[in-house]
Length: 291
Image 1 (cartoon, rainbow, N blue to C red):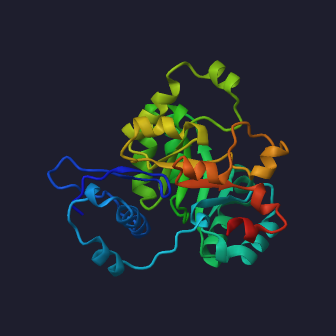
Image 2: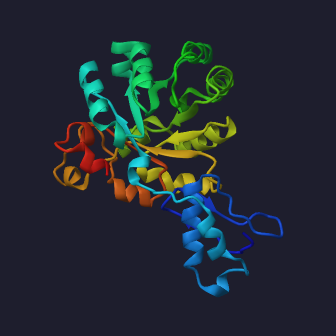
């Protein structure tokens, strides 16, 4: 599409930009983002666009329904094995990604991951937040080689060598798994962050994720704009925990998380995925929230 038009599309978390070449390009890969971009371009003023048959091109694209449920990773925390399987059986038609954390993985092990993969049509996010000396983390990733996982987390604060060696191992044994770097935990308040991390520490973590070619970064909704400044080409997926319904935030029901935001606000800020747990799994009507 030959057009000088460019802007940040907050709705799908992709960057629409001009390339350095003479002809502008929309740098998008997912079909639903292309449809979204075309809708946006069609609505622009005619003077903003070079002559191009957008209306002719649009009907040829497959019809894609974009739902916020596609962006939600449901955390299966504080649930027994039977509760997890029952929840998945009942709601798998509206689930896209489920997150297995350290608690569940230590209790039920790789067998539960394999069972979920066999029985349910969902992607699996193994949220172990690996953090140790480089060799230990590298070998821990190697031990996960047989698991059908789509996402895996490691702590960026483990340093460059740990991150680099982890990525090298992951590319060998988990080639289809996206590796996500964890920045600051959402349970940390501003005071603790300032005490634990020095000024400029967050910028370093983002640049480290880019330098070691990670697939994404886990951050609170409040760091998204800062990440956009350092990663304007959106090379990193933005995964945001600390998501609560507006009614929960109003009632102070954010449990142990301090930097929280609503799903709507976080998507508007440009998040690619939202991590939500008890707001959904403990709800009287999870389906309604997901839809």
